[in-house]
Length: 618
Image (cartoon, rainbow, N blue to C red; front, side):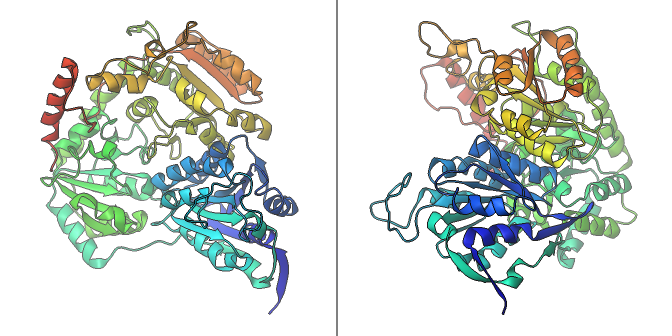
Protein backbone atom coordinates (compact mmCIF):
# COMPACT_ATOMS: atom_id res chain seq x y z
CA UNK A 1 0.00 0.00 0.00
CA UNK A 2 1.35 3.40 -0.98
CA UNK A 3 1.45 5.89 1.87
CA UNK A 4 2.11 9.61 2.23
CA UNK A 5 3.65 11.01 5.39
CA UNK A 6 1.81 14.12 6.49
CA UNK A 7 0.82 15.87 9.67
CA UNK A 8 -2.77 15.36 10.70
CA UNK A 9 -3.61 18.96 9.75
CA UNK A 10 -1.94 18.56 6.35
CA UNK A 11 -3.86 15.37 5.71
CA UNK A 12 -7.15 16.94 6.74
CA UNK A 13 -6.69 19.93 4.43
CA UNK A 14 -5.52 17.74 1.55
CA UNK A 15 -8.60 15.54 1.96
CA UNK A 16 -10.97 18.51 1.93
CA UNK A 17 -9.31 19.91 -1.19
CA UNK A 18 -9.88 16.60 -3.01
CA UNK A 19 -13.67 16.57 -2.50
CA UNK A 20 -15.89 17.54 -5.45
CA UNK A 21 -19.66 17.73 -5.90
CA UNK A 22 -21.93 17.43 -8.89
CA UNK A 23 -24.23 20.45 -9.18
CA UNK A 24 -26.56 21.84 -11.81
CA UNK A 25 -23.60 23.97 -12.93
CA UNK A 26 -21.39 20.90 -13.31
CA UNK A 27 -18.64 19.45 -11.15
CA UNK A 28 -17.32 21.90 -8.54
CA UNK A 29 -15.17 21.81 -5.40
CA UNK A 30 -17.30 20.73 -2.45
CA UNK A 31 -15.52 23.24 -0.19
CA UNK A 32 -15.27 26.83 -1.38
CA UNK A 33 -12.55 27.39 1.18
CA UNK A 34 -11.83 27.73 4.88
CA UNK A 35 -12.59 30.70 7.10
CA UNK A 36 -9.80 30.99 9.64
CA UNK A 37 -8.94 33.10 12.64
CA UNK A 38 -5.63 31.84 13.95
CA UNK A 39 -4.52 31.54 17.54
CA UNK A 40 -2.01 29.43 19.42
CA UNK A 41 -4.38 26.45 19.14
CA UNK A 42 -4.36 26.26 15.34
CA UNK A 43 -1.81 28.64 13.82
CA UNK A 44 1.08 26.16 13.80
CA UNK A 45 -0.75 23.00 12.72
CA UNK A 46 -3.74 24.12 10.66
CA UNK A 47 -2.07 27.38 9.66
CA UNK A 48 0.87 25.65 7.99
CA UNK A 49 -1.40 23.10 6.32
CA UNK A 50 -3.72 25.75 4.90
CA UNK A 51 -0.76 27.74 3.62
CA UNK A 52 0.50 24.74 1.66
CA UNK A 53 -2.92 24.29 -0.03
CA UNK A 54 -3.90 27.96 -0.38
CA UNK A 55 -4.19 27.63 -4.17
CA UNK A 56 -6.59 24.66 -4.13
CA UNK A 57 -8.41 25.45 -0.87
CA UNK A 58 -8.45 29.22 -0.27
CA UNK A 59 -8.25 30.61 3.25
CA UNK A 60 -10.42 33.60 4.14
CA UNK A 61 -9.47 35.74 7.11
CA UNK A 62 -12.47 36.99 9.11
CA UNK A 63 -12.88 39.30 12.09
CA UNK A 64 -15.18 37.34 14.40
CA UNK A 65 -15.50 33.58 14.78
CA UNK A 66 -19.27 33.60 15.06
CA UNK A 67 -19.49 35.94 12.08
CA UNK A 68 -17.30 33.81 9.85
CA UNK A 69 -19.30 30.70 10.70
CA UNK A 70 -22.51 32.58 9.87
CA UNK A 71 -21.00 33.52 6.51
CA UNK A 72 -20.06 29.90 5.86
CA UNK A 73 -23.57 28.73 6.74
CA UNK A 74 -25.17 31.37 4.51
CA UNK A 75 -22.89 30.27 1.67
CA UNK A 76 -24.16 26.71 2.05
CA UNK A 77 -27.81 27.80 2.17
CA UNK A 78 -27.40 29.98 -0.91
CA UNK A 79 -25.97 26.91 -2.67
CA UNK A 80 -28.96 24.78 -1.62
CA UNK A 81 -26.60 22.75 0.61
CA UNK A 82 -24.60 21.49 -2.38
CA UNK A 83 -21.40 23.38 -1.52
CA UNK A 84 -20.04 24.50 1.82
CA UNK A 85 -17.12 25.86 3.85
CA UNK A 86 -15.05 24.91 6.86
CA UNK A 87 -14.13 27.17 9.78
CA UNK A 88 -11.08 26.82 12.01
CA UNK A 89 -10.35 28.60 15.28
CA UNK A 90 -8.02 28.40 18.22
CA UNK A 91 -9.13 26.87 21.53
CA UNK A 92 -11.03 28.72 24.24
CA UNK A 93 -13.07 31.80 23.27
CA UNK A 94 -12.25 31.39 19.59
CA UNK A 95 -13.92 27.99 19.64
CA UNK A 96 -16.89 28.91 21.84
CA UNK A 97 -17.64 31.94 19.67
CA UNK A 98 -18.73 29.41 17.03
CA UNK A 99 -21.17 27.56 19.29
CA UNK A 100 -23.96 30.04 18.52
CA UNK A 101 -23.38 29.55 14.80
CA UNK A 102 -23.44 25.78 15.30
CA UNK A 103 -26.84 26.12 16.97
CA UNK A 104 -28.05 28.16 14.02
CA UNK A 105 -26.83 25.58 11.49
CA UNK A 106 -28.36 22.75 13.52
CA UNK A 107 -31.77 24.44 13.76
CA UNK A 108 -31.79 25.27 10.05
CA UNK A 109 -30.37 21.88 8.91
CA UNK A 110 -27.45 23.55 7.12
CA UNK A 111 -23.95 22.12 6.59
CA UNK A 112 -20.77 23.67 7.98
CA UNK A 113 -17.57 21.92 9.04
CA UNK A 114 -16.25 23.35 12.31
CA UNK A 115 -12.60 22.73 13.18
CA UNK A 116 -11.85 24.28 16.58
CA UNK A 117 -8.47 23.76 18.17
CA UNK A 118 -8.43 21.76 21.38
CA UNK A 119 -6.22 20.98 24.36
CA UNK A 120 -3.09 18.79 24.19
CA UNK A 121 -3.99 15.13 23.81
CA UNK A 122 -0.77 14.15 25.61
CA UNK A 123 -1.63 16.52 28.51
CA UNK A 124 2.05 17.23 29.11
CA UNK A 125 1.72 21.04 29.36
CA UNK A 126 -1.69 21.03 31.07
CA UNK A 127 -3.28 23.39 31.81
CA UNK A 128 -2.52 25.17 28.55
CA UNK A 129 -3.52 28.72 27.81
CA UNK A 130 -7.34 29.06 27.56
CA UNK A 131 -7.93 25.55 28.87
CA UNK A 132 -10.99 25.31 31.11
CA UNK A 133 -10.29 22.56 33.63
CA UNK A 134 -12.98 20.23 34.96
CA UNK A 135 -11.81 18.91 38.31
CA UNK A 136 -13.48 15.52 38.01
CA UNK A 137 -13.37 15.02 34.22
CA UNK A 138 -10.01 15.80 32.57
CA UNK A 139 -11.21 14.66 29.13
CA UNK A 140 -13.64 17.57 28.86
CA UNK A 141 -12.86 20.87 27.16
CA UNK A 142 -14.96 23.83 26.09
CA UNK A 143 -15.41 22.09 22.74
CA UNK A 144 -17.81 19.69 24.40
CA UNK A 145 -20.26 22.61 24.18
CA UNK A 146 -20.52 21.71 20.49
CA UNK A 147 -21.98 18.26 21.20
CA UNK A 148 -25.67 19.27 21.54
CA UNK A 149 -25.49 21.64 18.55
CA UNK A 150 -23.60 19.32 16.16
CA UNK A 151 -25.03 16.56 14.00
CA UNK A 152 -21.63 14.89 14.19
CA UNK A 153 -18.93 15.43 16.81
CA UNK A 154 -15.50 13.93 17.31
CA UNK A 155 -12.36 14.87 19.17
CA UNK A 156 -9.22 13.96 17.24
CA UNK A 157 -6.66 12.64 19.72
CA UNK A 158 -4.63 10.54 17.26
CA UNK A 159 -3.60 11.55 13.71
CA UNK A 160 -4.96 8.36 12.11
CA UNK A 161 -8.46 8.98 13.51
CA UNK A 162 -9.34 11.33 10.65
CA UNK A 163 -9.22 8.38 8.23
CA UNK A 164 -12.57 7.27 9.62
CA UNK A 165 -13.86 10.51 11.13
CA UNK A 166 -13.57 12.78 8.09
CA UNK A 167 -15.71 10.58 5.79
CA UNK A 168 -18.28 10.25 8.58
CA UNK A 169 -18.39 14.03 9.01
CA UNK A 170 -18.83 14.56 5.27
CA UNK A 171 -21.57 11.94 5.12
CA UNK A 172 -23.45 13.98 7.72
CA UNK A 173 -22.85 17.28 5.94
CA UNK A 174 -24.18 15.86 2.67
CA UNK A 175 -27.06 13.77 4.00
CA UNK A 176 -30.47 15.21 2.98
CA UNK A 177 -32.10 14.04 6.23
CA UNK A 178 -29.31 14.41 8.81
CA UNK A 179 -27.69 17.53 7.33
CA UNK A 180 -26.26 19.97 9.84
CA UNK A 181 -23.00 21.08 11.44
CA UNK A 182 -20.15 18.62 11.89
CA UNK A 183 -17.48 19.41 14.49
CA UNK A 184 -14.00 17.92 14.64
CA UNK A 185 -12.19 19.22 17.71
CA UNK A 186 -8.50 19.12 16.80
CA UNK A 187 -6.07 18.63 19.68
CA UNK A 188 -3.32 21.11 18.97
CA UNK A 189 -0.43 18.72 19.47
CA UNK A 190 -2.10 16.13 17.23
CA UNK A 191 -2.48 18.73 14.46
CA UNK A 192 1.30 18.72 14.15
CA UNK A 193 1.89 14.95 14.52
CA UNK A 194 2.81 12.98 11.40
CA UNK A 195 1.37 9.70 10.15
CA UNK A 196 1.78 7.53 7.07
CA UNK A 197 -1.63 7.98 5.46
CA UNK A 198 -2.88 5.70 2.65
CA UNK A 199 -2.47 7.54 -0.64
CA UNK A 200 -5.93 6.56 -1.82
CA UNK A 201 -7.41 8.50 1.12
CA UNK A 202 -6.65 11.65 -0.91
CA UNK A 203 -8.03 10.46 -4.24
CA UNK A 204 -10.51 12.94 -5.72
CA UNK A 205 -14.11 12.02 -5.05
CA UNK A 206 -17.26 13.42 -6.63
CA UNK A 207 -20.33 13.52 -4.38
CA UNK A 208 -23.92 13.38 -5.67
CA UNK A 209 -27.23 14.26 -4.08
CA UNK A 210 -28.95 11.12 -2.84
CA UNK A 211 -32.66 11.12 -3.60
CA UNK A 212 -34.93 8.85 -1.60
CA UNK A 213 -38.07 7.62 -3.36
CA UNK A 214 -41.37 7.26 -1.53
CA UNK A 215 -42.41 4.01 0.09
CA UNK A 216 -45.24 2.56 -2.09
CA UNK A 217 -47.59 2.08 0.86
CA UNK A 218 -47.07 5.60 2.22
CA UNK A 219 -47.48 6.98 -1.29
CA UNK A 220 -50.76 5.12 -1.84
CA UNK A 221 -52.10 6.40 1.49
CA UNK A 222 -51.13 9.99 0.67
CA UNK A 223 -52.73 9.78 -2.77
CA UNK A 224 -55.94 8.40 -1.23
CA UNK A 225 -56.05 11.19 1.35
CA UNK A 226 -55.54 13.86 -1.29
CA UNK A 227 -58.22 12.39 -3.52
CA UNK A 228 -60.68 12.77 -0.64
CA UNK A 229 -59.72 16.43 -0.19
CA UNK A 230 -61.73 19.22 -1.74
CA UNK A 231 -59.84 22.21 -0.34
CA UNK A 232 -56.13 21.35 0.06
CA UNK A 233 -53.31 23.81 0.77
CA UNK A 234 -49.64 23.03 0.17
CA UNK A 235 -47.14 24.47 2.66
CA UNK A 236 -43.68 24.73 1.10
CA UNK A 237 -40.58 24.66 3.31
CA UNK A 238 -36.86 24.99 2.77
CA UNK A 239 -36.60 21.35 1.73
CA UNK A 240 -38.22 22.28 -1.58
CA UNK A 241 -35.25 24.51 -2.39
CA UNK A 242 -32.67 22.02 -1.13
CA UNK A 243 -34.17 19.20 -3.21
CA UNK A 244 -34.27 21.51 -6.25
CA UNK A 245 -37.97 20.77 -6.41
CA UNK A 246 -39.23 24.28 -7.22
CA UNK A 247 -40.34 23.36 -10.74
CA UNK A 248 -41.90 20.09 -9.56
CA UNK A 249 -43.89 21.95 -6.90
CA UNK A 250 -45.15 24.57 -9.35
CA UNK A 251 -46.23 21.88 -11.80
CA UNK A 252 -47.99 19.96 -8.99
CA UNK A 253 -49.85 23.07 -7.84
CA UNK A 254 -50.95 24.05 -11.34
CA UNK A 255 -51.92 20.53 -12.40
CA UNK A 256 -54.07 19.87 -9.34
CA UNK A 257 -55.25 23.38 -8.43
CA UNK A 258 -53.56 23.48 -5.03
CA UNK A 259 -52.76 26.92 -3.53
CA UNK A 260 -49.26 27.24 -2.07
CA UNK A 261 -48.22 28.95 1.17
CA UNK A 262 -44.60 29.36 2.20
CA UNK A 263 -42.57 29.10 5.38
CA UNK A 264 -39.67 31.49 5.96
CA UNK A 265 -37.22 28.95 4.50
CA UNK A 266 -39.60 28.04 1.69
CA UNK A 267 -40.33 31.57 0.53
CA UNK A 268 -39.56 32.03 -3.14
CA UNK A 269 -40.67 28.61 -4.34
CA UNK A 270 -43.50 30.45 -6.11
CA UNK A 271 -43.17 33.85 -7.77
CA UNK A 272 -45.13 36.35 -5.69
CA UNK A 273 -47.60 37.10 -8.51
CA UNK A 274 -48.45 33.49 -9.38
CA UNK A 275 -52.25 32.98 -9.14
CA UNK A 276 -51.79 30.09 -6.67
CA UNK A 277 -49.17 31.85 -4.49
CA UNK A 278 -50.59 32.71 -1.07
CA UNK A 279 -47.36 34.08 0.43
CA UNK A 280 -46.07 33.46 3.93
CA UNK A 281 -48.05 31.39 6.42
CA UNK A 282 -48.44 31.39 10.20
CA UNK A 283 -47.59 33.96 12.85
CA UNK A 284 -45.90 36.20 10.29
CA UNK A 285 -48.02 35.07 7.36
CA UNK A 286 -50.35 36.88 4.99
CA UNK A 287 -54.05 37.13 5.61
CA UNK A 288 -54.56 35.22 2.35
CA UNK A 289 -52.45 32.21 3.36
CA UNK A 290 -53.83 31.98 6.89
CA UNK A 291 -57.45 32.30 5.80
CA UNK A 292 -57.03 29.58 3.18
CA UNK A 293 -55.27 27.34 5.72
CA UNK A 294 -58.11 27.82 8.19
CA UNK A 295 -60.66 26.74 5.58
CA UNK A 296 -58.56 23.91 4.13
CA UNK A 297 -59.60 20.30 4.73
CA UNK A 298 -56.06 18.99 4.12
CA UNK A 299 -52.56 20.40 4.49
CA UNK A 300 -49.75 18.95 2.39
CA UNK A 301 -46.53 20.10 4.08
CA UNK A 302 -43.44 19.67 1.89
CA UNK A 303 -39.92 19.99 3.28
CA UNK A 304 -40.78 21.86 6.47
CA UNK A 305 -40.11 21.11 10.13
CA UNK A 306 -43.38 22.81 11.12
CA UNK A 307 -42.00 25.15 13.76
CA UNK A 308 -44.38 27.17 15.89
CA UNK A 309 -44.31 30.25 13.67
CA UNK A 310 -45.49 28.13 10.74
CA UNK A 311 -48.28 26.37 12.64
CA UNK A 312 -49.32 29.41 14.73
CA UNK A 313 -48.37 27.33 17.76
CA UNK A 314 -50.55 24.45 16.49
CA UNK A 315 -53.72 26.52 16.20
CA UNK A 316 -53.54 26.89 12.40
CA UNK A 317 -51.77 23.67 11.34
CA UNK A 318 -51.23 20.37 13.11
CA UNK A 319 -54.69 20.20 14.66
CA UNK A 320 -56.44 16.79 14.74
CA UNK A 321 -59.53 18.11 12.92
CA UNK A 322 -57.46 18.90 9.82
CA UNK A 323 -55.71 16.21 7.75
CA UNK A 324 -51.95 16.69 7.56
CA UNK A 325 -49.53 14.95 5.20
CA UNK A 326 -45.85 15.52 5.82
CA UNK A 327 -43.71 14.96 2.71
CA UNK A 328 -40.21 15.13 4.11
CA UNK A 329 -36.92 13.37 3.56
CA UNK A 330 -36.34 13.26 7.33
CA UNK A 331 -38.31 10.72 9.36
CA UNK A 332 -37.95 12.99 12.40
CA UNK A 333 -39.96 15.73 10.67
CA UNK A 334 -42.35 13.53 8.69
CA UNK A 335 -44.08 12.13 11.79
CA UNK A 336 -44.47 15.42 13.67
CA UNK A 337 -47.84 16.53 15.02
CA UNK A 338 -49.64 13.32 14.17
CA UNK A 339 -48.99 13.77 10.46
CA UNK A 340 -49.49 11.09 7.86
CA UNK A 341 -45.86 10.60 6.80
CA UNK A 342 -44.55 10.43 3.26
CA UNK A 343 -40.81 10.05 3.70
CA UNK A 344 -39.14 10.95 0.41
CA UNK A 345 -37.08 13.46 -1.48
CA UNK A 346 -39.31 16.45 -2.20
CA UNK A 347 -38.91 16.32 -5.98
CA UNK A 348 -39.41 12.58 -6.28
CA UNK A 349 -42.28 12.69 -3.81
CA UNK A 350 -44.14 15.48 -5.62
CA UNK A 351 -43.66 13.78 -8.99
CA UNK A 352 -44.94 10.47 -7.60
CA UNK A 353 -47.93 12.16 -5.95
CA UNK A 354 -48.83 13.96 -9.15
CA UNK A 355 -48.67 10.73 -11.13
CA UNK A 356 -50.87 8.97 -8.60
CA UNK A 357 -53.36 11.86 -8.64
CA UNK A 358 -53.81 11.84 -12.41
CA UNK A 359 -57.14 13.46 -13.24
CA UNK A 360 -57.74 14.84 -9.74
CA UNK A 361 -58.05 18.55 -8.92
CA UNK A 362 -59.31 20.54 -6.00
CA UNK A 363 -62.86 21.84 -6.28
CA UNK A 364 -63.14 24.56 -8.96
CA UNK A 365 -63.96 27.45 -6.64
CA UNK A 366 -60.96 26.75 -4.39
CA UNK A 367 -58.30 28.14 -6.75
CA UNK A 368 -60.55 31.10 -7.53
CA UNK A 369 -60.89 31.81 -3.81
CA UNK A 370 -57.09 31.77 -3.51
CA UNK A 371 -56.84 34.36 -6.29
CA UNK A 372 -59.45 36.54 -4.58
CA UNK A 373 -57.69 36.36 -1.21
CA UNK A 374 -54.29 37.23 -2.69
CA UNK A 375 -55.74 40.12 -4.71
CA UNK A 376 -57.08 41.61 -1.48
CA UNK A 377 -53.72 41.09 0.19
CA UNK A 378 -51.88 42.78 -2.69
CA UNK A 379 -54.11 45.83 -2.28
CA UNK A 380 -53.24 45.87 1.40
CA UNK A 381 -49.53 45.55 0.48
CA UNK A 382 -49.76 48.61 -1.76
CA UNK A 383 -51.28 50.57 1.11
CA UNK A 384 -48.78 49.68 3.86
CA UNK A 385 -45.66 49.97 1.69
CA UNK A 386 -46.59 53.27 0.02
CA UNK A 387 -44.04 56.07 0.25
CA UNK A 388 -46.61 58.70 1.11
CA UNK A 389 -48.91 59.07 4.07
CA UNK A 390 -46.61 58.12 6.94
CA UNK A 391 -48.88 57.41 9.90
CA UNK A 392 -46.79 56.41 12.90
CA UNK A 393 -46.52 57.65 16.49
CA UNK A 394 -43.12 59.15 15.77
CA UNK A 395 -43.76 60.39 12.23
CA UNK A 396 -40.91 58.17 11.03
CA UNK A 397 -41.22 55.49 8.31
CA UNK A 398 -42.42 52.04 9.27
CA UNK A 399 -40.48 48.88 8.48
CA UNK A 400 -43.07 48.08 5.81
CA UNK A 401 -42.49 51.40 4.07
CA UNK A 402 -38.74 50.85 4.11
CA UNK A 403 -39.18 47.42 2.52
CA UNK A 404 -41.46 48.95 -0.10
CA UNK A 405 -38.77 51.49 -0.97
CA UNK A 406 -36.10 48.79 -1.24
CA UNK A 407 -38.35 46.70 -3.48
CA UNK A 408 -39.09 49.63 -5.79
CA UNK A 409 -35.35 49.97 -6.44
CA UNK A 410 -34.70 46.21 -6.72
CA UNK A 411 -34.27 43.99 -9.76
CA UNK A 412 -35.98 40.56 -10.01
CA UNK A 413 -32.65 38.76 -9.48
CA UNK A 414 -31.78 40.64 -6.27
CA UNK A 415 -31.39 38.77 -2.98
CA UNK A 416 -32.71 40.15 0.31
CA UNK A 417 -30.96 39.00 3.52
CA UNK A 418 -32.22 39.33 7.09
CA UNK A 419 -32.45 37.37 10.34
CA UNK A 420 -33.92 38.62 13.60
CA UNK A 421 -36.26 41.12 15.19
CA UNK A 422 -39.39 42.48 13.57
CA UNK A 423 -37.99 42.68 10.05
CA UNK A 424 -38.30 38.93 9.25
CA UNK A 425 -42.00 39.11 10.07
CA UNK A 426 -42.49 42.10 7.79
CA UNK A 427 -40.46 40.43 5.05
CA UNK A 428 -42.36 37.14 5.32
CA UNK A 429 -45.63 39.00 4.86
CA UNK A 430 -44.55 41.67 2.41
CA UNK A 431 -41.43 40.86 0.41
CA UNK A 432 -42.29 40.07 -3.19
CA UNK A 433 -39.86 37.35 -4.24
CA UNK A 434 -39.49 37.05 -8.01
CA UNK A 435 -36.95 34.24 -8.36
CA UNK A 436 -35.86 31.21 -6.31
CA UNK A 437 -33.04 32.11 -3.97
CA UNK A 438 -34.07 35.75 -3.85
CA UNK A 439 -35.20 35.55 -0.23
CA UNK A 440 -32.60 34.61 2.40
CA UNK A 441 -33.93 35.05 5.94
CA UNK A 442 -32.53 33.05 8.85
CA UNK A 443 -35.49 32.41 11.11
CA UNK A 444 -34.97 28.89 12.39
CA UNK A 445 -32.65 30.25 15.09
CA UNK A 446 -33.65 33.92 14.66
CA UNK A 447 -30.08 34.89 15.44
CA UNK A 448 -29.30 38.56 15.90
CA UNK A 449 -26.00 39.34 14.23
CA UNK A 450 -26.42 36.89 11.34
CA UNK A 451 -27.46 39.57 8.88
CA UNK A 452 -24.21 41.17 7.69
CA UNK A 453 -22.12 38.02 7.97
CA UNK A 454 -24.88 36.08 6.24
CA UNK A 455 -24.99 38.66 3.47
CA UNK A 456 -21.27 38.15 2.94
CA UNK A 457 -21.76 34.39 2.61
CA UNK A 458 -24.65 34.85 0.17
CA UNK A 459 -22.57 37.20 -1.98
CA UNK A 460 -19.70 34.71 -2.03
CA UNK A 461 -22.14 32.07 -3.25
CA UNK A 462 -23.97 34.32 -5.74
CA UNK A 463 -21.46 37.01 -6.81
CA UNK A 464 -23.44 37.83 -9.97
CA UNK A 465 -26.56 38.85 -8.01
CA UNK A 466 -27.17 42.03 -6.04
CA UNK A 467 -27.35 41.33 -2.30
CA UNK A 468 -29.17 43.72 0.04
CA UNK A 469 -28.99 43.21 3.79
CA UNK A 470 -31.66 44.79 5.99
CA UNK A 471 -30.72 44.96 9.66
CA UNK A 472 -31.98 46.70 12.76
CA UNK A 473 -29.75 48.80 14.97
CA UNK A 474 -29.83 46.11 17.68
CA UNK A 475 -28.50 43.37 15.42
CA UNK A 476 -25.97 45.72 13.86
CA UNK A 477 -24.51 46.51 17.27
CA UNK A 478 -24.31 42.80 18.15
CA UNK A 479 -22.19 41.79 15.15
CA UNK A 480 -20.97 44.11 12.43
CA UNK A 481 -17.31 43.15 11.99
CA UNK A 482 -17.81 41.24 8.74
CA UNK A 483 -18.48 44.56 7.05
CA UNK A 484 -14.70 44.91 7.10
CA UNK A 485 -14.34 41.37 5.73
CA UNK A 486 -16.68 42.16 2.83
CA UNK A 487 -14.56 45.19 1.96
CA UNK A 488 -11.32 43.24 2.34
CA UNK A 489 -12.50 40.38 0.12
CA UNK A 490 -14.14 42.68 -2.43
CA UNK A 491 -17.65 41.28 -2.00
CA UNK A 492 -19.90 44.30 -2.38
CA UNK A 493 -23.07 44.45 -0.32
CA UNK A 494 -25.78 47.02 0.22
CA UNK A 495 -26.63 47.19 3.93
CA UNK A 496 -29.68 49.14 5.09
CA UNK A 497 -29.62 49.87 8.83
CA UNK A 498 -32.98 50.71 10.41
CA UNK A 499 -32.38 52.70 13.59
CA UNK A 500 -35.41 52.61 15.89
CA UNK A 501 -33.25 53.15 18.99
CA UNK A 502 -33.68 49.81 20.63
CA UNK A 503 -35.22 46.39 20.33
CA UNK A 504 -38.51 47.54 18.83
CA UNK A 505 -39.84 44.06 18.06
CA UNK A 506 -39.47 42.78 21.62
CA UNK A 507 -40.80 46.05 23.01
CA UNK A 508 -44.01 45.46 21.04
CA UNK A 509 -44.19 41.86 22.27
CA UNK A 510 -43.53 42.99 25.84
CA UNK A 511 -46.47 45.35 25.78
CA UNK A 512 -48.71 42.89 23.90
CA UNK A 513 -48.26 40.50 26.84
CA UNK A 514 -49.23 43.20 29.30
CA UNK A 515 -45.75 44.19 30.35
CA UNK A 516 -44.47 47.70 30.88
CA UNK A 517 -42.14 49.25 28.31
CA UNK A 518 -38.88 48.27 29.98
CA UNK A 519 -35.26 47.65 28.99
CA UNK A 520 -35.89 47.36 25.23
CA UNK A 521 -36.10 50.82 23.69
CA UNK A 522 -33.25 53.01 24.80
CA UNK A 523 -35.62 55.54 26.34
CA UNK A 524 -36.87 52.80 28.69
CA UNK A 525 -33.44 51.58 29.84
CA UNK A 526 -31.33 52.38 32.86
CA UNK A 527 -28.65 54.85 31.77
CA UNK A 528 -26.06 57.16 33.25
CA UNK A 529 -26.51 60.88 33.60
CA UNK A 530 -25.71 61.46 29.93
CA UNK A 531 -28.48 59.14 28.77
CA UNK A 532 -28.35 56.75 25.84
CA UNK A 533 -25.90 57.71 23.09
CA UNK A 534 -26.96 58.81 19.63
CA UNK A 535 -25.04 56.30 17.55
CA UNK A 536 -23.66 57.42 14.21
CA UNK A 537 -23.92 54.12 12.35
CA UNK A 538 -22.72 55.67 9.10
CA UNK A 539 -19.53 56.94 10.73
CA UNK A 540 -18.96 53.53 12.27
CA UNK A 541 -19.41 51.77 8.93
CA UNK A 542 -17.00 54.18 7.25
CA UNK A 543 -14.46 53.36 9.94
CA UNK A 544 -14.69 49.71 8.84
CA UNK A 545 -13.90 50.67 5.24
CA UNK A 546 -17.41 50.77 3.79
CA UNK A 547 -19.09 53.64 2.03
CA UNK A 548 -21.88 54.95 4.22
CA UNK A 549 -24.45 57.69 4.54
CA UNK A 550 -27.30 58.76 6.79
CA UNK A 551 -30.50 59.53 4.89
CA UNK A 552 -33.74 61.24 5.85
CA UNK A 553 -36.94 59.54 4.80
CA UNK A 554 -37.94 57.17 2.04
CA UNK A 555 -37.03 59.40 -0.90
CA UNK A 556 -33.51 59.73 0.43
CA UNK A 557 -33.33 55.97 0.90
CA UNK A 558 -34.35 55.27 -2.68
CA UNK A 559 -31.76 57.61 -4.19
CA UNK A 560 -29.11 56.18 -1.85
CA UNK A 561 -30.00 52.66 -3.01
CA UNK A 562 -29.38 53.75 -6.59
CA UNK A 563 -25.93 55.05 -5.62
CA UNK A 564 -25.15 51.87 -3.71
CA UNK A 565 -25.86 49.73 -6.77
CA UNK A 566 -23.20 51.69 -8.69
CA UNK A 567 -20.64 51.70 -5.87
CA UNK A 568 -17.32 49.87 -5.97
CA UNK A 569 -17.57 48.47 -2.45
CA UNK A 570 -20.01 47.70 0.35
CA UNK A 571 -22.35 50.59 1.10
CA UNK A 572 -24.21 51.12 4.36
CA UNK A 573 -27.36 53.28 4.32
CA UNK A 574 -28.77 54.36 7.68
CA UNK A 575 -32.14 55.89 8.45
CA UNK A 576 -34.33 56.42 11.50
CA UNK A 577 -37.52 54.36 11.66
CA UNK A 578 -40.57 53.99 13.88
CA UNK A 579 -40.33 51.30 16.60
CA UNK A 580 -44.05 50.97 17.33
CA UNK A 581 -45.79 50.14 14.04
CA UNK A 582 -45.97 46.64 12.59
CA UNK A 583 -48.04 45.28 9.73
CA UNK A 584 -51.38 43.67 10.43
CA UNK A 585 -51.93 40.05 9.49
CA UNK A 586 -50.34 36.93 10.84
CA UNK A 587 -51.72 34.60 13.47
CA UNK A 588 -51.43 33.77 17.16
CA UNK A 589 -48.12 32.87 18.80
CA UNK A 590 -47.84 31.03 22.11
CA UNK A 591 -45.85 33.32 24.41
CA UNK A 592 -46.55 32.47 28.04
CA UNK A 593 -47.97 35.32 30.13
CA UNK A 594 -47.43 35.39 33.94
CA UNK A 595 -50.31 33.92 35.94
CA UNK A 596 -49.71 36.36 38.79
CA UNK A 597 -48.91 40.06 38.55
CA UNK A 598 -49.63 43.33 40.33
CA UNK A 599 -50.24 44.92 36.92
CA UNK A 600 -53.82 44.84 35.64
CA UNK A 601 -52.58 44.76 32.05
CA UNK A 602 -50.69 41.52 32.73
CA UNK A 603 -53.71 39.95 34.44
CA UNK A 604 -55.86 40.86 31.45
CA UNK A 605 -53.25 39.54 28.99
CA UNK A 606 -53.09 36.26 30.90
CA UNK A 607 -56.85 35.80 30.60
CA UNK A 608 -56.62 36.37 26.85
CA UNK A 609 -53.72 33.94 26.72
CA UNK A 610 -55.74 31.21 28.46
CA UNK A 611 -58.59 31.72 26.00
CA UNK A 612 -56.23 31.46 23.02
CA UNK A 613 -54.64 28.30 24.46
CA UNK A 614 -57.97 26.53 24.14
CA UNK A 615 -57.51 26.48 20.36
CA UNK A 616 -54.53 24.16 20.75
CA UNK A 617 -55.10 20.38 20.60
CA UNK A 618 -53.63 19.86 24.09
